[in-house]
Length: 158
Image 1 (tube, one colour):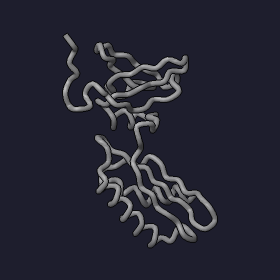
Image 2 (image 1 turned 180 degrees about the vertical axis):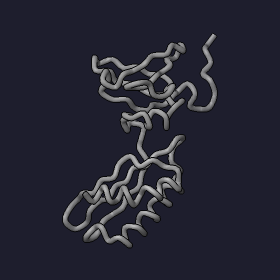
Image 3 (image 1 turned 120 degrees about the vertical axis):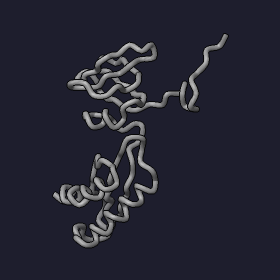
Image 4 (image 1 turned 30 degrees about the vertical axis):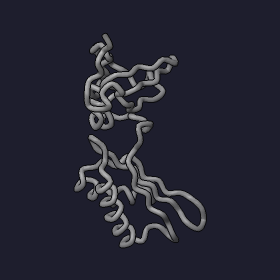
């Protein structure tokens, strides 16, 4: 499969730049295909790193001539709504705020304390730690900690 070969070409580039390759997809119309590459790293991926991945992969693709016809290469990082599903995901985003949508329709928010067997450990606002099993959830995503979004702790009104 062509996506697997592209992942092979990306592996040394990603390793050199310290990013993880999350997804490679190739699709689109007859005249111009879209090659989308999603990469991530702890703390987010700087724009300059996305540019470097794009340039390096573009050179590799030109040398290998893997994709017939015209194509558009898009190298991006995941948004907050990108689902976290693996131990590597939870390690990469350790310390960030997560929202777990539970299979029973409820949701749990808290700080990511890292992976747990079959899931993730989350500390809620009170500091209580809860292990969330992936099979109990429909989706786990990053979220914004609005109380600390400006770098300061939220103060209680008196």
